[in-house]
Length: 362
Image (cartoon, rainbow, N blue to C red):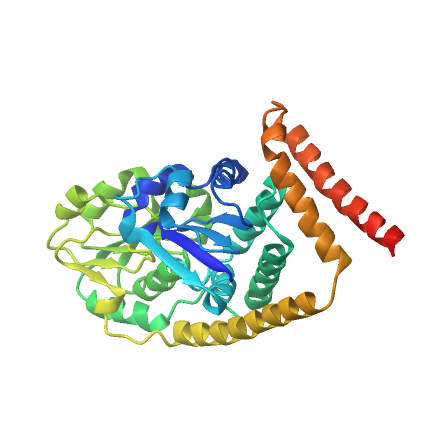
């Protein structure tokens, strides 16, 4: 039975900062630690907002947490687990980005592909998990091609604009669709300033808005009559101490995950009383498609179990061989590229040898 043991970063972002944007390095390092205690196939997935072990049996949360180098007590509120058919569907939903704080993000598909590749290299994966993750990446590409998942309901921007009547100067943090939509609605009646974490994206700022330095955001916020955060980062734009200095101004947090600290006066999307129809429709579509994709995966499992497949068996033997050779290979002190080449050669050679032997025997 497939199982997912996970940690959601968003309730305690700073505790997981050492895992973010580290690519293959953290996947392989933490994956090797997991190999020492997990005796069944697994894949470690790390995205911008979560870490998960997808496995062929249940993994205790403390096992994942120790491998990631986080305090189990400190992150206990971040845990979640999913099993069986729900776990299979979850991987498809995860790949689509609709369960990400940044709704509909498409970067998760690349992170899942990287996780699958890293697991193959250290020998922790299996043909079953390989198939599931490959199907999930293909599913994500299909969803993002067929539907617009990065949606922002204009009704939110209209509700904000209505509340800002009489506030002439507005500072907006962010450059995404939500920030641009709000800015465009406000520009006819307001002086709009926009600040971005990534200044290479200033070309996204709508004509008529004023680009300001992110380093000077606090000064700009103090000079503005209202502040709107529509950022997509995991880290707060203003600290609680900074935000408290803005008390009395309208402070709107349209970010996902929330970008402004929990202080009195912050207005979030849930406080606007508007229906996010486009988002609801996207969730409905992807949920339906994910259920269908999970069904296809289960059908593949049944076919594989009922009909002997030499290629499937060869993959499983090759990955098991790599698992057993993980220690000796890691102790060779090779450079990253040489080690990767050696691991790939071992997997390919064992797979081909198995198939060749099977055919000669038949």
